Image (cartoon, rainbow, N blue to C red):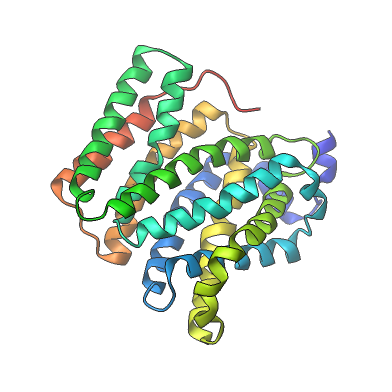
Length: 290
């Protein structure tokens, strides 16, 4: 009851309450890697850390104007989520500057599957873990000799992605505030956290209207639309159901990479992505995140 009272009674909140939660996941799946794919195109004008800064600042500005999420900043979970978002995005952009989008997306899910297998020791999760390890081995075996830095940042991004899922679920289920307000507060924290390491790389874009507009577009398509969809989906889907659905993301990233960036995967990489997709689909959690 307390959470419902904090949500604005407007058309957006009515849609959020009545639309099937699976539709929000589809929106998240599409934009989760479509925005970063456009960011890769922006790398010709702005360095990866600069693009990460533009993405987060643009998203923070949207949330500040839309939600005014100042009260959410009193939550330690929101603050922690903001720091994780900042570092995760920095690692993600450095990795996709060096590796195909589908490879980075597949590596993202290894810690999530490993944590599930450790926390719930079943034959099903053992199969999932073996499949994920095999898939990631095939993907990194193709790339690690030529791009060890990219692989290292991809694994760092993966660990932070697992932590993001934990924190985002807690924010989505926190009855003291709406999940979107919590997300907005986290994005403000992320803006402060990434500024010391990203603003200097973004400086050239501030004098280039095209690069600046592209950076704002990347921020909205990468950090507003998919993260809002995540919160709306997480608030109504169990962790097990959500984990099953995220099995689509590595495949989505591969398709986006092919269409937008012409990153045609090798047969080995296709098998690797397929093994990771199968692993995420097979594994199960013991309980939802609180």
